[in-house]
Image 1: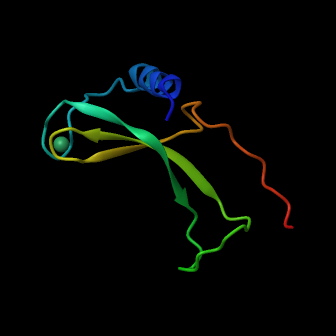
Image 2 (image 1 turned 90 degrees about the vertical axis):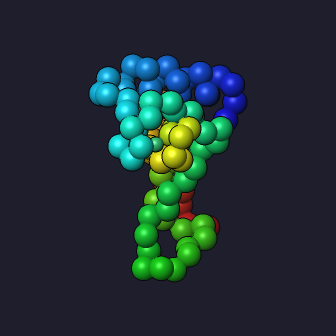
Image 3 (image 1 turned 180 degrees about the vertical axis):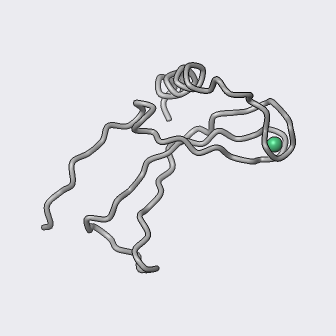
Length: 90
Ligand SMILES: [Zn+2]
């Protein structure tokens, strides 16, 4: 994640995370935004499909510095990644 994206992620969290920022596992309140965008793949019966129309959900992670518990946020909703149109089969 570029420094600009990290700033954007922090600003988005600052705006949206109005609930108590306590960790649901250990009650700590110290979080860090992980440097990188993860991706979740749509489940397809256990088969790995490469280059298909499978859905991929980009996400960024916010980790509790004490216990490692992670919140997962949609990177498209946060404006970090643009939603791409499905590509036609080649
Ligand atoms: Zn924790």
